[in-house]
Amino acid sequence: VADHGARVVMEHCAVHDGAQGGMLAAHGGTLVLSHVNCCRAAATGLEVRQGGNAFVQDCSFFKNGRQGIIVWHGARSFEARRTEVHSNEFETGVLIEENSKSAVFNSCKLYGNG
Image (cartoon, rainbow, N blue to C red; front, top):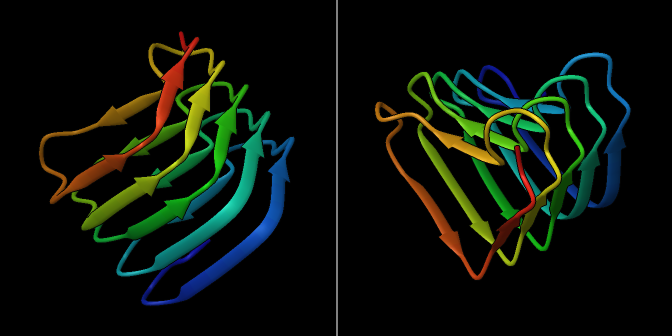
């Protein structure tokens, strides 16, 4: 969790089998993820909301119980590069809500979701 202005950097890590969601950025917190696999969370793999920021590069979000990535409820920024989102079970691999400031995907692969 990156919350209340915290900045969390994760490189070459795995986040899996969470009883709820995988990772969260909110209230001015920032997640910087590189080569991170996030899978089998009961809910969403990565959630960015309420002024949160996330930058993901060369990551994978798969087999989560809901979306792989959700950017909503006033998220400040989200950017993904060379990231795969696949095999997430609920509705869609990625959900971006209209009141989020920005969401950018560059050279990403989204497939086999919901």
